[in-house]
Image (cartoon, rainbow, N blue to C red; front, side, top):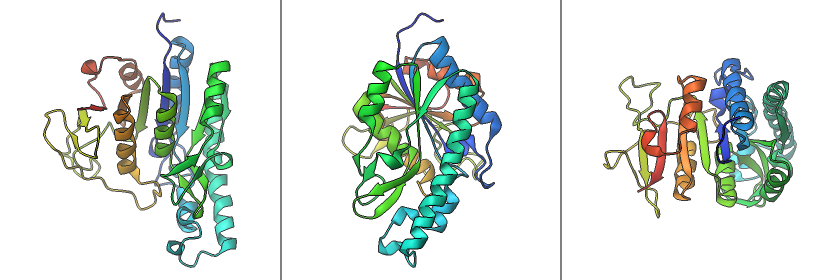
Length: 295
C-alpha cells in the first residue's frame, strides 16, 4: 500500500464512456474494466475514499426521450398522459438500474465493497433536474465516515419534482451537489473524449484540446490556458436528455468555482494514463485532459 494522505475523490463516469450510445443498452466492456481498475487502485492501493456516479448512456435515454419523462406533467410533455408517464418512469428506471447493476457486479467481482444509493428514492428537485431541493448526501457522508471502504454508487435517474411531478436528474448535477456539501479533494469527470475541445472533436479533426480552463468566480465566463476568452461549440446529442458535454462543462465549472480540484479526462487515454493524471496533485504537472480552476 502506498504511503499517502487519504483523499475523498468523487467520480462521474459518463454514460458515453461506459456504454455505446449508438447501440441500445450496450455496454462498453473495455471502459467498464478501466473504471474498475481505476476505482480499485485508488481505493485499495492508495486508501482513498471514493464516491462513484455513472451516467446512463445507451441505458435510459431512449425511454426518457420516448416518454418525455424530463418534462413530467408540464405542457412540454405534449400528449404524454398520466398512464404513459408512469410507464415511462418504470421503463427508464429499469434501464438505468440495469447498467447500475452491471457496473456494481464488476466492482464486487473485483473485491470492492459497494453500495447503490439511487436518487429516485431520496432526491427531489423543483421545476427541473438542475434545482435540487432534497438529497441523501447526509447519509452518504455518514457512510463514508463510519465505513470508509464502502463505495457509494449513484447514477443519472428519474427524480421526483415538486413542480413537474418527475424529471431527470443527471450525474453531472449529482456530482455538483456532492462537491458543494462534501468538499472533496478532487472531482473527476471521465468522458468519451479526452477532455474539453474548442469544437466538437467528433466532427472537426482540427479541434483543439484545452488543457486548462480558468473560470470566473462570479459568472459563466471562462478562459483557456492562454488567458483569452474562448467560445466553445458544444453540441448536445438529441438522445441525451441530460445535455451531453455542455452539461458536463457547466457542472465542472461550478465545481471548480467551489475551489475543488476538477479534471475532465477519458477518451483515447489508457487506464494507466487516466489513473496517473488523477494522482497528480499539482495542476501544473497535469498534461492530459482538461483541468479547471478559478482565474
